[in-house]
Image (cartoon, rainbow over all chains, first blue to last red; front, side):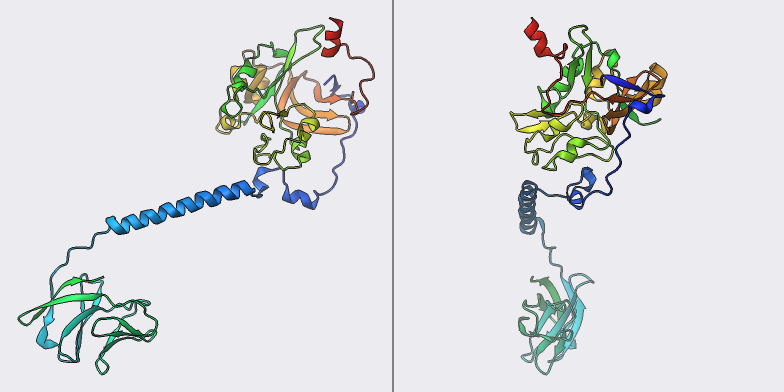
Length: 181
Length: 206
């Protein structure tokens, strides 16, 4: 900083150093611009893992809490499905309960008892149909089979039973009164 | 409005140390100033000169860092060393032609002026430029500087064969285009003659 070069007398100044060509390969891994720096230190990784795990645990807690206290099943509504006499032995009838988006099936088994189940297969949500000759509910998508007596899976991919629709009979009216999960 | 830049006008410095005190108040390095307030020819004058980081376009401190700890942001500000990476080797301290980086042994880390990045990145002035009563340190647009100052701002430095361009400007007489330092001392050679302005020499004399 002792001397200053005059603008019109550049003779004293040495020529600017020529550029040494492209940057070496290793410089790509250790760039000076911050935007190009993608190196993750061990401490940063540890911090990320710790915070990420804590967040995951907290999210699980929230989901569990919502499942335990947050969601309340809607009060069961009473819906008249059909006349009991309309369903013969070995016959079935489709209906919607508790909302129009919930397809269900009413079957009369070989023993003459009326039972109702959700029609949504617990495997991949296809609609099950009643096979009167075997007294079972059959899902044609992946050949899943449920018992028409209690809705439990008998064969094929499903592992969970079909939700049962509780029904009641008043005179000749079949009434849906609730849904078991 | 053009972008604001940092300007140092050494001739305006009155040595009040306001910039040093303001810098010390920053929470990221409380109590330690990142500004060097240099004395110039102490024997003959009380003139002082503030030295902030010049934020070189091609920062040699970052290039010599073996730990990849010094980074330059897209807006051209060379940041202080990254705490998880700095190994305290002082390569940057030795390499900086302006003598800016400081090695702080207490935290085993290099720290330097980062142009108050928390402030300047949101359009505020750096602390030192905010408090400087004579505006030897100012953060303004180049148009404002041209209107209010006699000299011309320059940002080119020639250290022997090395040309350094900086983000920070210094005010110089209008005809000067670059600052040339041609009195270079090789490390290990030692001074060829006793420097009468050397502080150690002055103390010996006293």
